[in-house]
Length: 156
Image 1 (cartoon, rainbow, N blue to C red):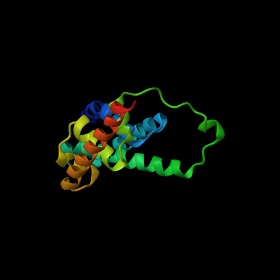
Image 2: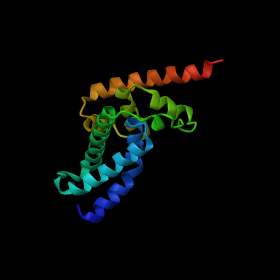
Image 3: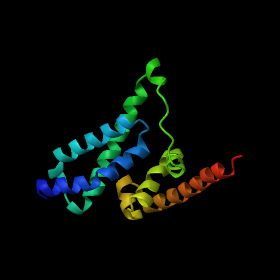
Image 4: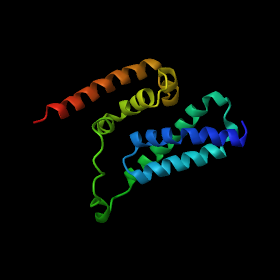
């Protein structure tokens, strides 16, 4: 894969990378940092990619590892009083907020399968999970979404 082909492929994935980071990290600056660091690492390691057809899987795996690193780092930090006074994000759509409210274990499979359009096999490969586990998490995620959205509809 030439550098130009790599750049074109990455440019086509940037929205997907940002959406995946949104499911993993709550703070917008952390999301942007994760995507930026993912792009940097992918560029540096581009020659280690064995098969081009797995490029998306490879880059998303780098992103997930980076999100985990950022979460671990932020768990060690103590927020200052000024930071805790930050206003909550603007009103989001009901479905988007419902997806963000899902358990972490089902949020990413839901995003990758339903929003990004990856197959169960591709999702399983990206998350290093058996296909059966991905299917059960998709089922559990659909049930949780239904419960969350029904609560909003039937609230007085």
